[in-house]
Length: 220
Image 1 (cartoon, helix red, strand yellow):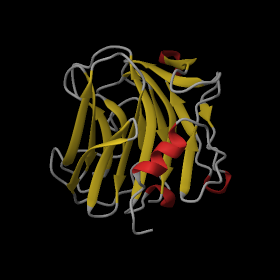
Image 2: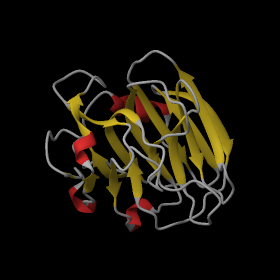
Image 3: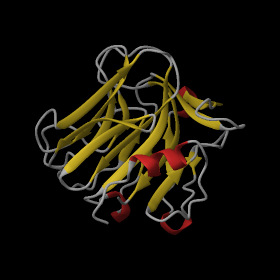
Image 4: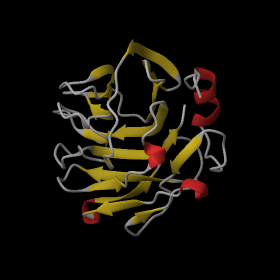
């Protein structure tokens, strides 16, 4: 692929569950389980199941992301409580889109990890989504070996669910919130073989307090 996912493509899929066979979809976790420590990848051809650590501090809540009886994974802000996605070749695309629904249980007071594949000065930094330093809002970053990397951010303060998408085509990164483009810039991304952490920073610090649902990774 040599194009980013478009605003229309994002809007077409954000309010519904997917089958897992959509073109370009490489991983999809819908968090509809209600127990256990493994979350299944809906994309059978690239199945990469998630492992929940310290799951006494993470649980499933009813999801308010969109209509229908569904679940979301909830984090209570306890350090060491997170979900780990093991690295694989399908997670190391130089072009990708990452999308998910998120709801803050409380205003953040630091750069807490929502979904993190690497941020910081290391050559292995990659892409990440953090909370803003205060209030409710999102930072989408592309790790370039500096701290911070190339970043875009957007704020809200309404205690509501929001859909977030970050796209990168190897040169340009774009942040979408609720299907609307809210920022764009050029960026440089380092390749890495990191796992992905959900609910906490990759170094197991700065845990998130809130719910995450419908995590999807595309190859464009």
